[in-house]
Each structure stands twice: as structure tokens, then as C-alpha cells.
Amino acid sequence: MPAKVWIGIDIGGTKTAIVVSQRPPDVSEHLEFATLPSRGPGRALDLIGKGIGAILSRRGLPSSAIRGIGISCGGPLDRLRGIIHSPPNLATWVDVPVKAILEQQFGVRCNVENDANAGAVAEHRYGAGHGFDNIVFLTMGTGLGAGIIVDGRLYHGTDDLAGEIGHVRLTRGGPVGHNKRGSAEGWASGGGMERVAMRAVEDARMHGRSTILTAHRGTLTARDVCAAARRGDAVAMRIVRSTGERLGQVLAILVDILNPQRIVIGGLAMRTGELILGPAREVMAREAIPASAGSCQVVPAALGERIGDVASLCVAMGL
Picture 1 (cartoon, rainbow, N blue to C red):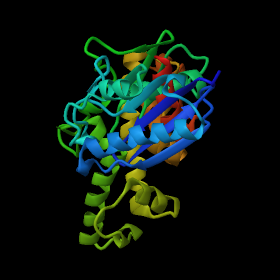
Picture 2: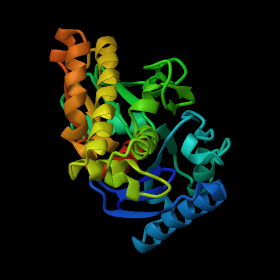
Picture 3: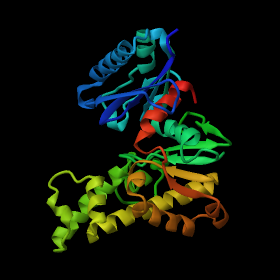
């Protein structure tokens, strides 16, 4: 009898990954390709189907050997019907019924979940949230979203919209994120850091301040800013600290409302560590209710760059 496998699919604006596992969180096979959202969903869906087919063929498995398929993707989406509704990083994916497409193609159950919720479950089961009943997971990538675990269970909210912390307004003005000026996403995400950095570099040019960031023509990424900060660039260090302080304001809001034991942060904070987490913890401790802040640890995601793979497998197994 052939071994049964779980299939996980992590769909992002930059890349899409397909993973296979007999015993999650262990991954026995991983393949990925550029999503290229400008070409629409058809190409990527075709590559997903062919990728799963190739994996099964290499392992000598029929489609019936798949125990379940899980898709982790940025929202908005309808998780119950499995429809992707034009996420910001997949703007051409308009009402795409991925669940129905893959279930028809492979004859097995396919679950769909937004990436923040899937990441929260992955870290709760296998990562930095393991052993804790109340945690919040923050994506902190191009955008900022949260997955919330309450009393050991994922909290979806009435309309499956719980955790949209990126939409909360921190200031009346400021960078735009989540379609709102001065929002948490505008200030405390990788995309937000990039927008702040572009303004800071222009200001440095105008006032004759030196920064190695001026060497980056055109697009300036959060990775560029953090690399410059590690090299001691004063302008970059101010940008990174400012992002960390804004993140701390977000953490204080989450702590005051949810009183979690741990806040686990992926993406940018996971890659930069104390450069961002240090200032964030300082502001959280200052602004949140002292008892709640004292009970909450703020830590980077333990699954590291594997989190998308493991999250999609968690979706396949059921949340």
C-alpha cells in the first residue's frame, strides 16, 4: 500500500512553493516557481497542477495517496469556499476558485486559509508558540497581518476577518498601508519601511547628510535598509529603530486587547532580530498595561524561512 502524503501550497506574490510531507512538519520534497501575478492566475495554477503531478510521478504515487491539500495565501479570501479575492500582492487573482480547481483535478479535499492564520497555527503546533494557549502571530512582510490563537484554538472572527491589525490607524498622517494613511501596516511592515526609507533618503540628499542608501537607485527594499543599519549607517539605523518603535505601538494594542502569553513575529523581525525587536519591546513595555506586558514574551518565529511550508501543511491537515 503506497504511503499517504500531505500536499502544502504556499502562494505568495513573489513565489509559490509546493511541499510534500508524510509526517508534518518534516518536508520530504519542496519545489517552487515565480508566481508572476502580472500574468494572471492561469499560469500559476497550471504550474501547481503540473508540480503536484510531477511529485506524485517521481514517488510512484496515485492521486489517491494524497491525504489532503492545503493552500496558504494572503487575503482577502473566502476560506470556506476556497476563493482568492484579489490580494494586494496578487491583484490579478480576481475571485479564483482554487479549492474547486484542485479538488476536481486530484479528487481530494483541499483547504484554503490566509497566511497569517496558517502561520499562527504552524508556530503554535511546531514553533515558538508551542505549549502556550494564547498567542498572536504577526506576518510582518510586505504587509502586516495577525493570526490569533485563543485558549489553544485559532480565532477567525464573525466574518473570518479577525487579526487585521495592519488596518488599525496609528497616526492621522504617514505612509499608506492596507489602504489607510498612518496605518499599522503603513508604519510597521516591510513595505512600510521601504516607503519611509525612500522619504528619509530624499531628505538626507536635500540636507547633505551622508548615507549609503543613496547608492540604491530606484527601488529601495527593507533588506537594503537593514543591511545598511548593520553596517552602522546612521540614516538606516534611524529608519529601523523607527519601524521597531511603531511595531511596539502595535504590540501594545495587541497586549492590551488580547493579553497573550507570546507574540511571535515572522518576516522582517525574524530576519533582523534585536534591531527591530529591541525598540519594539521598549515601547510595548512603556505603553501597554504593565501586568499584561509583563506576562507577554515577544519572540521571532522559530520556524524561520520554513514557516510558509509548515503553515501550508497545517492547512492541509485542518486547522
